[in-house]
Amino acid sequence: MTPTQLHKLDRELSEFLDSMTEGMGRTERRRALGGYLTGLLLDGERKSIEPMAARLVAAPEQTEAMRQRLQQCVSGAAWEDSEMRRRLARKLERELPGLEALVIDDTGLPKKGVHSVGVARQYSGTLGRTENCQVAVSLHVAGEKGSGCIAMQLYLPEEWTRSRKRCKVAGVPAGVKFQKKWQIALRQLDDALAWGVRRHLVLADAGYGDAREFRDGVRERGLHYLMGVQGTRKVWPPGAKPRKPEREPGQNGRPRTRYVAEGVMPWAIEELALQLPKEEFQTVSWREGSRGEQSSRFAAVRVRTAERHVQRAAPSEEVWLLIEWPQEEKAPTKYSLCSLPANTPLTELVRLSKLRWRVERD
Image (spheres, rainbow, N blue to C red):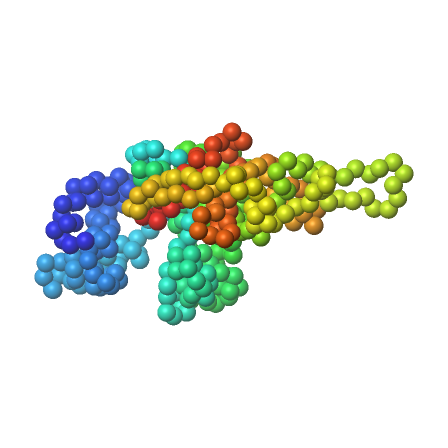
């Protein structure tokens, strides 16, 4: 933003910062934070403290004093991180219209070196490939008319948490242990619920939906989910009623403990989708961002998941399997699982699944 553009937002920005930092230390410190955030918003490729300080002052001789204030604000002062996030979450929950989802996402931040905390060669959905980067897990509240990020935490790969020396050099506290991304996301959901955020539907891509532990954790918290999954995941087909076999009278040897269903076995989702009658697929339209109305073909059937079936794991509750098969494609392209009730219309499942992209604007 240019100084002129930012000046037009002075009053709103000041009110916002006051609501976020009221009661958090001396006035001078809070003003310094306002200056730091202003520096982030102003035009300029470099966002480190010294070039930002130069952009915030009227004369070059004032730069050093501003640099010291910014340095103390972000490096020396202790801010109540959880309280500030709580205030932000409650503000967005209160003021954004039509919120209906909690969206889990992660963002890749490309890096050149190896010293930035959490940097590693890892997959980034933002970049669309494996790259040298940091990854941060985020939680957003979202609706058709707006969205906002209420939590963001850096993901530390195992190669970092195994090296206490590397963590110490980078300033990572000694008590920080390895957490999978879905474990970070569950903690973020717990925080949001504790702050008073309502129990919205949880949306996520296959990076989270593929973890049954995450889907089960969401349901244990009294929330519904709609999450992408890979087509290689196994499910019991529609109508199957898997049960644990009972020992028959006079049966010798160890009883079978894998779940069974009359005449059927679990299928890979992609195989099941190809077996569905073509008339099951309907063209559904939705609105997606600046591109206006979009449409594709979808089908939705009720299934139970069969992850770790061979390890005798129990099937899930009955859930929706939402399948997208664009007209021009030879096979389905996207799959999602959803725990919403059996009477949920296909058009609503599609609309909600596409709502996840709303947070790209955040």
